[in-house]
Image (cartoon, rainbow, N blue to C red; front, top):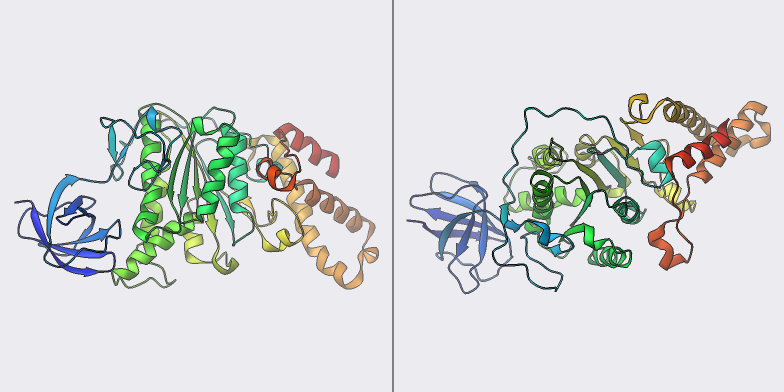
Length: 434
């Protein structure tokens, strides 16, 4: 017998009782109502009760309604036909174009790909972004993870769109974009930008935006990763994975946790925050078939970098680009805080001796600049020693040098975008500091 009965309904959480043959965690079960509402089994409460999530927020689910097992999870379409299309978290096409073929191959979003035992570490390959501050401070290395951290309105989404434009246009990798709990307007702008620059033919997009319930917002990243894994493992493609915004993934999981009456952790987030982040991040990995290089934006609530969710995500990253409100207020774009931005990949083995030595000199100058600003505010620049004055002037030039016009902003401000090769960036820095 595959049937169960709904025993309790609380917001998005539905308790279903089974006499025998309990469903599996991650299985979709169908309510026998007019809408045939799908429920996702989140956990098993005891030997007879499954705790499920009402993934479509259907309002006509009631106690004592019958439920039927499907023995299937959430399955999304996979294959070349998905390139250039926009999907919701359940793998349904939402771009208004021709439906996908009914016989298209599908994949369960919760099924992890096979782990390789004979994977050998490849020599680091740097992907040029054309953005000076990123190529210099946080080199974009194939198969690694980069995070863009910042509060509201400091330019995280614009920087992501610019990176998609600059990196994806080379056509070397397949680009993925997962819109997690962000504004619908931003998703539409990204779609129009990719369309304008003819990049849709090499991009797959998933959206679970701010208007969706927390179940769909938490699933969209997992669905996007599942399709990325397919292209990596079956099509042997290199993937560029962009996620905006990873903090919203944690936030959605936290909302579900609250509805389930789970006791929060010390930081106020769900008790499973670290495993939620870790399970997702571990799937953004490379193997002998191909690589997944990810860029993730992370919203900082109240501009507090010590927030537990921000820290949990940051620990999984190789590089972090910190966007600052103070820098943005000075009219500097991208508004990168050069002293807080860090990368474990900024080493001679990855970027070479020339780049590494320059980075050491630049960071020393910028730290000195930060210290001297406070002194100058009190006594004035003329009271500094000649050496300090010279170093302060160099650091000031560096800060100005790392500002850059964006291609994706051309339509709004009328200023032509700029692209700098890594060699041009290094040469420009040498001219300033040597």
